[in-house]
Amino acid sequence: MGKLYVVPTPVGNLEDMTFRAIRILKEVDLILAEDTRTSGILLKHFEIKNAMQSHHKFNEHKTVESVVNRIKAGETVALISDAGTPGISDPGFLVVRECVRNGIDVECLPGATAFVPALVSSGLPNDRFTFEGFLPQKKGRMTRMKLLAEEKRTMIFYESPHRLVKTLTQFCEYLGEDRQASVSREISKLHEETVRGSLKELITHFTEKDPRGEIVLIIGGIDD
Image (cartoon, rainbow, N blue to C red):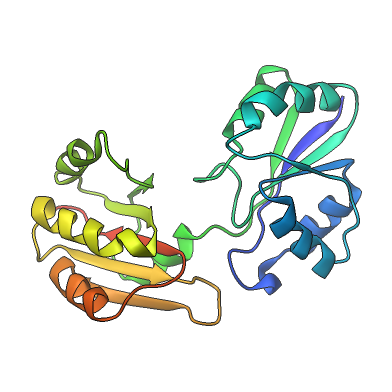
C-alpha cells in the first residue's frame, strides 16, 4: 500500500518551502493540487517535474475514491493547496478522512500556515486560542458572532479584504468597540503588515486605508 503526504506550501515567500517538502514532491507518484496553474509556478521554481491532478472543493467528492484506490494499489500521493497547509480552510479533509478510514498511512509535514505568525505577532494571549477560519457569509453569521462574544480564548479568523471593515463593524456591535484585535495581511510577502488596536481603531484605520491581500484577523477573548 502507498501513502498520502500532506505538504504545506509557502503562504508568501518561496524561501519558506522546506527541503523535505521539495524532496517529497519530487519523489511521489502524483501531486494533488488545488489549482494546477498556481502550483505549476511553485513546482517550476523548485524544478519539480511530476504528475499533477486537480483536487479542489468543487471536485474533491468525485476524485477522493479514485485517489484512495491509487494509494491502495501502491502509489504515493502528495496533497498541496495554493498556499499553506491543506485542510486548514482549504481542501484536504475529505481525502485525509477517507485514507484514514481505509487504513492508509497519512503523514502531514510541518510547515507554513498563515494563522500562526499572525497570532504570535498580534501581542494577544496565545496560550489558548480558537481557530474559526472564515465566518458564515449569511446563514448563522450573527448567531456565531453572538456566541463568540462570550469566548475567553483569543479568536482567529480569515477574511477577505473587501469584507474586513464590515466584519470589524459587526464584531464591534457584539464584542464592544474597545475589544483588542490585530489584523495581519500579506504574511511572508513583500508588503506584510500587522495593525493592532481596538476594534474601533481598526475600523477607522481600514476605512481610511483600503486593506489588500490575504488577511488574518485576531481578536482577544472576553476578560475573566
